[in-house]
Image (cartoon, rainbow, N blue to C red; front, side, top):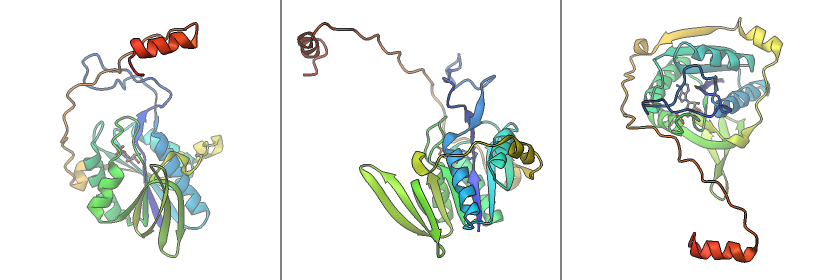
Length: 249
Ligand code: AMP
């Protein structure tokens, strides 16, 4: 079985995002970019399934600008076998990404597609679900455990107030949640080896996918800065403030 893992290049999670001066989006020029953290978890899970013998090949795909090939090289260094870069311009929307992925699924015929549950730049949490809808496949979203056996995949899902187990027939879509695994660091020898692994580049237009945006960003603003706290002398003072100033009790 082949596993397809879509990985997105996003602003590194350690960086505090800055809003562009014209309020049209988040500044990415000169900013450290990395693989979306949930996609690292998806890559790790796919590589582990191959190491356990449940899969034979893991293919990573990224849709975006040329520099997304760095993200794909990271995936290759983590153990992915080969990679596909689909050039489409900056920030394609989830529906466009899902349509590109559908084309690649038709070409590559994977048994599983493992995505991140959400990209930390736009927090859409939509691409996996849209892809499942387009393909008519079952989906196990927010996965905290994945087991492949007898032509099915068992997914434990993180839901409000507990866990839900779903059994899906293959092929299927999975989206990775935080507790699924702890992704490995790519070792230096593996980073060197990754440079020689195959990376194919395609144009979104050649796949016949309409990438035109459906959404318009009206404005982007920084969250309001928090007010400084205040130290109080006694519990009685706190109760007084909560009652008469904050009016919450
Ligand atoms: P989103 O729906 O934007 O929150 O993204 C959910 C998941 O879809 C991500 O964690 C990735 O696995 C995948 N994804 C979204 N955008 C892209 C992209 N441009 N290239 C590759 N994978 C993507």
